[in-house]
Every structure is written in structure tokens, then in C-alpha cells.
Amino acid sequence: MSTAMAPDLTSKQRQILQYLRENGATKTYFKSRLIGQELGMTAKEVGSNITALQQGDYDVEIEKWGYSSSTTWKVNV
Image (cartoon, rainbow, N blue to C red; front, side, top):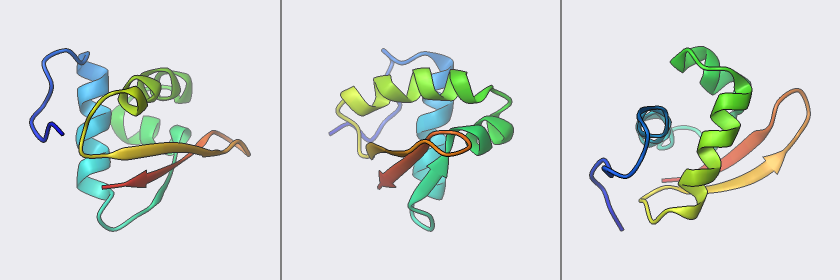
């Protein structure tokens, strides 16, 4: 598992990964729309970039959880 910022990620993916690492200790569920608001991205940008994080070997487990009013992600840090 890589705990450092992986060089193969795009800047948006690194931003999302860092955001989930920082907030995952106190929160489990995240909406794409709300992550996007925090990071200056659209919900669609978050969704398309978070799938790359799901497939990678990082210290964050991400599972697509729900779809109402923006995709919800279940995150374990």
C-alpha cells in the first residue's frame, strides 16, 4: 500500500485522495457533489477521477454506495 502521493495520479486524483485521507478519519460517506464543491470540481469530475483511485493500491478503500442527488462513496481510511 502506498501512503505517499503516487506520481502516476493526475493532480485532480491527488487532490481527491488527499481530501479523503484528511476527512476519512471522521466521516465514512462522501457525495461527489460535496467533494467537488470543496475542491473546485464538478461532481462528474470527482466521479470519473475517483474510479481510478478505487482501482489503485492506496491506503483508502472506496466503494460506490448510492446514487440519490449525486453519487455517494463509502470510504475507509
